[in-house]
Amino acid sequence: MNLRCLKRFKLSKFRLNFQRNYASEIQQNTRPYKLHKLKEPPSAKSTLKKEEALTYYRQMQVIRRVEAASSALYQAKLIRGFCHLYSGQEAVAVGMKAALRPDDKAITSYRSHGWTYLFGATPLEILAEQTGKKTGCQRGKGGSMHTYCKNFYGGNGIVGAQVPLGTGISFALKYMGSDAVCITLYGDGAADQGQIFESFNMACLWKLPAIFVCENNGYSMGTAVHRHAGNPNFYTRGDCLPGLWMDGMDLMTVKEATKYAMKYCKEHGPILIEAATYRYFGHSLSDPGTSYRTREEVAEVRNKRDPITNFKNIIVDGGLVTEDEIKKIDDDVKTEVDKATEQSKTDPDVGVDELVADIYSNNLEPFIRGVTPFQPLQHKRIGKAINLK
Ligand SMILES: Cc1ncc(C[n+]2csc(CCOP(=O)(O)OP(=O)(O)O)c2C)c(N)n1
Ligand SMILES: [Mg+2]
Image 1 (cartoon, rainbow, N blue to C red):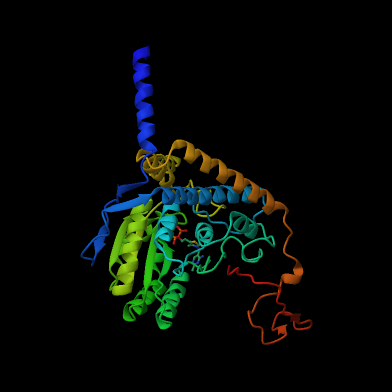
Image 2 (tube, rainbow, N blue to C red):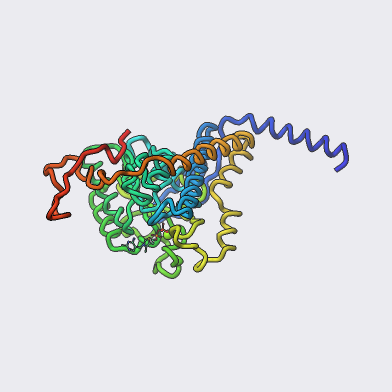
């Protein structure tokens, strides 16, 4: 590049930066939806304010870093048992939560860390829960698959079992005259279970404020969708439920779909959303995730469809957020999660005295029945295992 070209290049870069710092909100086109038994699609445009952009970007980065930290702690054998990571699926949780109001509820499967964070748990509480420490969100007694906080009902290990539970939460909301809705998430592998259809039926019958979300990440453990689903269009499988397909890798597409679904289910009853997404890690951390898919496939999604890179490009290219602001968030999140990771190694373990504590919220018998007939264990109330702050 000669000197004149270089000067011109610098000037245009300066102009671009100047313009980039200018926008306080942008309009983004949502990605096309597919509809089933619905007349109108969600909005084709979504407005994004600067503060929202910074928040959503940060939330997605925290989720990804907490999962990377969970993976490292698992490799170091400081997390034992099952551990399922959400990396790649962040835009579904952050986009949906962005549309919810403070009293709305959610329930999901064992892939729950990201949702727990969005409903109020800190990175330390999520990591320390997995390392079995007292500072964990359930005082270390739930572990990776059983994380909860106010308005978030877990963290459920049995495939599909959260769907009737979520339907029950929606029923309770209607019964108590609440304006809130409940989002019930399940995977493509869970979608063939009988209890899902029983739940749909009850929700339809009683017009419950229920948003069912099938997170189609392409695989049920090591089985690809085309090998396990007779009908792979999960958004069409609700029988009496209308369905909506959305690109779950695009945060604003997810947010607009959620706003639409909330309005729909308050007016007409339940709705089913399929979120097309992808997971980067194996099914759980004991699965390398490479025997049933190629490394190239994973690399291609990371390069072309990654939800965080996609969102970053939109907000930087749209002039809403600068590269420096992105870097600052990245650095802050790294510092916060690194600190939480170290603390999750050294905080005190849960004592044996807690083994039979907090089993009942209101214990009516002093002893735990049926565990050791010769030496009954006394029930203790140590502290709230669920932080309702
Ligand atoms: C009733 C039941 N059957 C089998 C399992 C073992 N299992 C755990 S996760 C899983 C696959 C579920 O896949 P999907 O619903 O697509 O969710 P994803 O893991 O992709 O999020 C299976 C078969 C289980 N936990 N519960
Ligand atoms: Mg799946």
